[in-house]
Length: 154
Image (cartoon, rainbow, N blue to C red):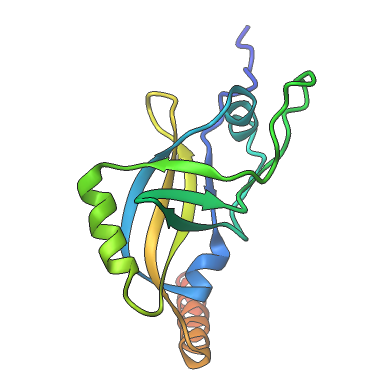
């Protein structure tokens, strides 16, 4: 008998709102510093990136407002759901991102969180620029046209 384990499923949680609100310039994959109960909640898929954003503090990159639900089987040593978490990147990448981030109008947005082949949680972040209202309308038109083409193919 093949028993299904609790953490067998592939974790790939996306921030769909980010692609609508922002235009991505560069993408990076970063590690994240987590506690034991946080990684267990991520493996269960209980993460929300919709309100999350990244910022620099003393040349280190942090993510804020990423909601990881408390682990249901943990005791009183459970984690805080929306605490700041440090992102892990190489120094060259951090300097490159920080220099671009200093430009006016750019922000760092998490796009997705996933678990790699080694079982480590990674966050894909993007250096991005906010879209204007007409850009958002254009992206909606493109999605509708793409959807119509797919319908006609069937």
